[in-house]
Length: 558
Image (tube, rainbow, N blue to C red):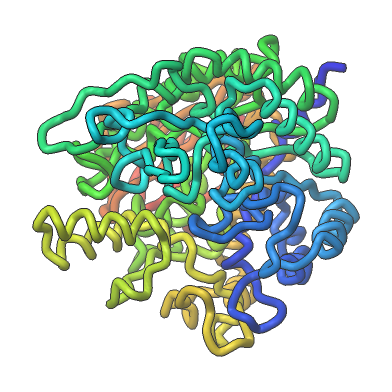
């Protein structure tokens, strides 16, 4: 049976990071009962789909992305009965649930790995990548995404195992057909429970080049970026088509693949419905535009022309071929209003502008918890207040390279993943209403007294109600789903303007990405601003040819 029901095209997804969403029992850690408590809030917002970051049993080296048992719930989050209740409550509200699928790696505490390391002839040995050392060092020169080598020595069998992430996250060997069958069986377990799809963690890394060769080292590097040998690898399409045939096609679900390093050409292959792989992918290109050479911690300001060029490439490259996922924020990205907007005097305006710019594009939008109230980055004074393994490892590595404390903190304030992971801000009470306990697992952003759900719901002009309108418009206007995309004012350094066209309709979107007043000088565009009908603006009385700071306008030709 082929899954032809493309309900996800009109859907809006809301990502919950359960550890930071709502704590129901005062232990300082968000949980499933906390999510159940807030489902009516999400229904009010208007989202259709909840994407839940991992809630599986895990020792939490990488906040749940290191899974010890795929078919048990982490004790801190609750029980399987809690999970079943949450799923039933979501479905009762006509909302769907998408789970994280983390199958590039497991925890080193997973039973498969515990068995695998016992001996070279253990039946589970080939579930992972084991290799002998080379010249007294690691089998190759690949670096881990979380710093250091991608290999760890295990003295039990005098061999190394591969881990592209933490050493507690050994990579699974997808070349093994028995392993693949086990994974498909596990996926069916969750789908048979009634979940509505999967977000697939770094899924384009599951096919490695078989000989795992060394990669080139750039100046000063000890370990290489071996990505060319494990991103979009030789058998990736074969593996995804097999997964689709064995599992995905048998259920009316949605699938989205997280795929670092995928190009638009790759994305067309992954998402073309006739190829039977996945419905959409997450790209990272637009999230790397404010990184200088050398990676995300090396900062540079965003050039709007670069952003326009990149998003246009994805909009036009996939039109009538595949499908886009649209996002600014997730659990791995800093808060967008602090990153591409202004989180001080124009926080509300810039948050609404950024939402407008994204939500009128073609694709499925993803809202990350707190984005709908304009949550901001956080600046903790002490490194001891940070919890993210990537941030902690970066600090150690950069200190050794001679970076100052101030330089390291400046990078963390802008790019650290904990910016997205501070607790959800529900009200003005202690810890922002996230927990009744004394100590949340990570500190709450001190701006919770000003930025919280209670305040947002009491203000008809809040960011929350703006997001509610955006979601409603997507349901009403087929042009948002079907229309093509035409970039306007390509070289303008401050304005992002585009048209969506379908049949005889035209939608015009104009966004000011600056804190300045900006006059529209293009004569044709000025005429349209004067003649088209206003659909949505983030200021009172939008539609003029001089845009106020961070102003956004959406107009329609009739």
